[in-house]
Length: 291
Image 1 (tube, rainbow, N blue to C red):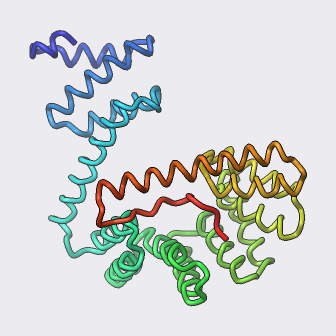
Image 2 (image 1 turned 45 degrees about the vertical axis):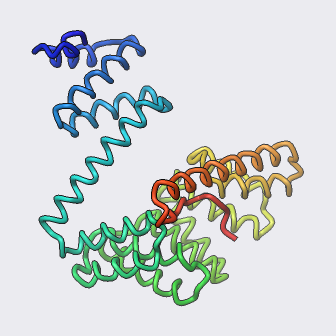
């Protein structure tokens, strides 16, 4: 470390060796940060990101490392986007990237336009049909036309990418919104069989169980959902309501507090994004339960 700070040669190999072999968490973190800084100053973002990924596994709540990682990952993303813009500015992938950026900015309407442009250019582009379906349902989930369009996109996604739990869960959500309970149950069950760790399928099955007044079964699925995704506000809110039905008042209050804390945190994140870019209002998913 002293050699690096004095600008002497040979420091980096020693730090690499120490970072790989050290057992002491505090010293390994110190060496890792120095090594990441060394790579970053040389402009080697890939190596920097690799070290930071290891550091974050050991220090997930370290604010300084998180800040460093955010900067490096942003630069990597910008570099890749700039390269894509140069090599394929009029490509389907570029349209898809524009759509994703618009979603992050909260502009679902224009994102749908760019997704459709991408599909016109390449109807078999992997992942594109599912992303469009999700965006359609995020914007106007109760609109019959949006549901019909999203269903078509999901069917196209199955044909191109193959079926998976995320697609089945989205189909289950649409069927539930259309009050096709048996169809919704079939889709959610299939999603759960494909991926028992999918919180969307778990929440969907819980919602259907509540409608059938099977509150204990609903609670079981919701407990799984909050285990898989502890920051899922919707799961905590629904579990609060189910606990009330089961007369578990203490547990219900606990889940309500978690829901309110998560929602407050997401509101804070949304406000910070607004301050950084007042022209946009980014979507922060999971901040409130679906009606």
